[in-house]
Image (tube, rainbow, N blue to C red; front, side, top):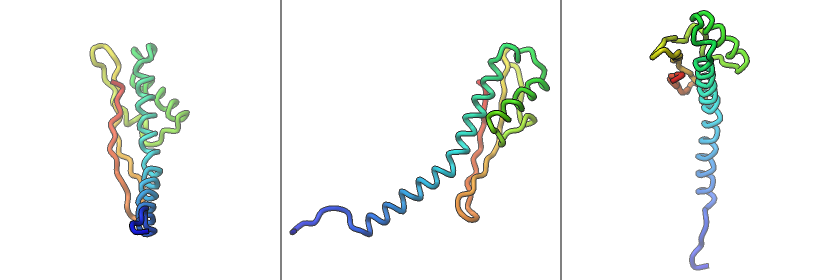
Length: 117
């Protein structure tokens, strides 16, 4: 055994700790991104609904409220929606921040801008 090959125990432990920390971080952050894509999908569905093209802002907010209860959206409320018309099409925007606790007093803050465009 003139030349030994392979990973030492200490190298294996350091690599394992780094990989485990990355996976735990991913598990903490992933729900925020899943909720963002759910908000975006909901805004697109409402904005492209033919019945909503002539709806009032109150009706649009009511439709978003119903969809957010079904899809379990908690980061955005109907009052957070920005409703506008561009080129005779309905455009919905929602801007919000999501704070995700990581460990003890360390947290990550994400700023999201979901749009129906």
